[in-house]
Length: 321
Image 1 (cartoon, rainbow, N blue to C red):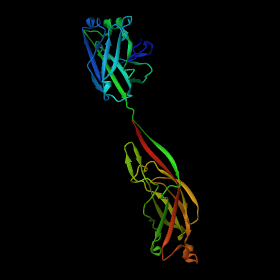
Image 2 (cartoon, one colour):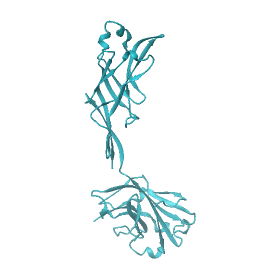
Image 3 (cartoon, rainbow, N blue to C red):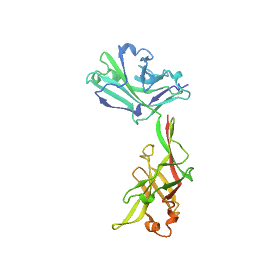
Image 4 (tube, helix red, strand yellow):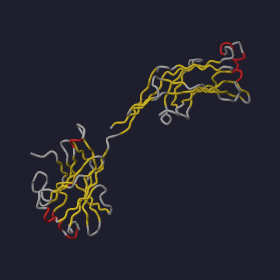
């Protein structure tokens, strides 16, 4: 029966054309007296740690893990160790690269999967490697420089961490706490050509809070009232809605809001950011304040402006892994 704890890449899928000067970044396995070592079934390195996991190099000088003759080839595998200490259902995804040192040219032959495949270690696959790393003829050829007294094997293991970030975007219709009233006292004392801002107000039910792997935030806005000139004469009040994301995760992302003006029942929608506002430059003619309608808008020199947020976007950040 096949031993499912081991998996070999076929000879046709091996890329062994690259060489480099830099030694293996993670582990080097020096084998002395290879002519004697090749008479045993296998030779294992000590354990070493890479990416938070324990590993071993497993060398089969003449045969693979199943004990079948490999027609004069060397087999080399990477084995993950101490798996009993890993969590239930564990798996580790890796890129693996093996090395053999050319002692004549002072270079390392790089051996890896020709397709750059990700190798997944799990309960039923605890070893990955090459049943036909290279032939004995290649190893014994003095011109290759692989067997000069000793033989040096190496490995690099790049663990692909299963952690990623993302976000879930949604739209909320009629969010709670979506109505804001701004009372502007002493309206007649407001100076021309100045902008006046309401207090911040929060739209939605979420308070500013954090959970592990999940981030929720509130939507904070201010109303901005100014004036509109015609020539040199101020003719209208301007009213804008501004998103204040300076203390939230939305300062770079932006928030969509559809809002309604109580004065004219009109609606507007906009993607808000700390640089984007939305509103009406000619919101209300100043003529209303000097006509019979003045008492409609001003009560005791107080101007009341109302804003309702009908729809608002929300985003939840998450971390998986």
